[in-house]
Amino acid sequence: MQKPLIITMGDPTGIGPEIIVKALLAGSFDGLSHPVVVAGDPHVLQQAATTFHQQAQIKASCGPADYELRIGEKVLAVKALSHFDPLPVPGAAPDAAHGLAMAEYIEWACARCRDGNAAGMVTAPISKAAIRAAGYDFPGHTELLARRCGVERVVMMLAGARLRVSLVTTHLPLRAVPQALSRQEIFTTLRITDGDLKRYFGLKSPRIAVTALNPHAGEGGLFGDEEQRLIEPAVREAQAAGIDAQGPFSADTLFHFAVQGRYDAVVCMYHDQALIPLKLLHFDDGVNLTLGLPIVRTSVDHGTAHDIAGTGTASADSLVAAVLMAARMADEKS
Image (cartoon, rainbow, N blue to C red; front, side, top):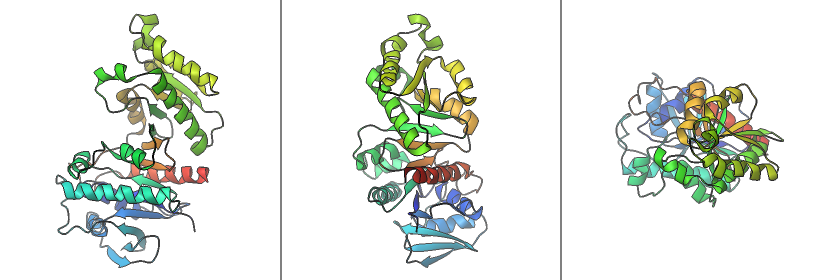
């Protein structure tokens, strides 16, 4: 039997439970190369089914998880890592108990992937504030997983069918970005991006474009010198290491050519430089990947959306895309 993909349920008060159920009802997990197991709370998922006017039954199981959630002919394996009583209210602010449960879902899934008993993990959105309230000092999934896997440097990639972007810096104030950039950080991002595109996407020699930081790539130093001091040397170092890297290119034109297929990925200097074009093209079906880990990890490309939790209107497209991508990555890795 193929090793399962584990979906972590995420914030019990957010849209995670309902988009998992929504995808199940749509048949999105049918025919996958790996079975799906949800790490979460079976009763929260049962409650989510009522959002779609469905009655779900919970039964004990001897399979890869310890419970089955049954909705008509649809069956979802669930590893019960929390049993909330009373049940969380969709859309309510999560508390420390919810944060502790979110962390436990992630910890369990990561451990199963690390010990070889799972093919990969797909994460639904969490509340970072609730995680911190539970006593965890991690800003989010990525940092927690890196620590548990013993990895010092990972890379955030956002991907869709038409565009892949990797980030040198992630969640920083814009004014802090130039100081956070270095030749070594840019080169490391290129190295990890190149390695995992080969490892998980079957690309023998990925074509990677690199954005400039400043308008018009600095215009020869007129608008800034980071291109000359940091980015160009990092690109040359990557090329010397056998990586097909090119740039730096002005971001206002680069993405046009990347979307046309000239490049397999774009390495960007900061958060919005990467995510604005990505979300313009893949707002509903973008996938967040963590590169540089020894395990497969994908995620939805959105937050907990408390404002619409419990309404059934949240799109499951990003979750489905993340599951499909994790399955393909696991197959390519094996």
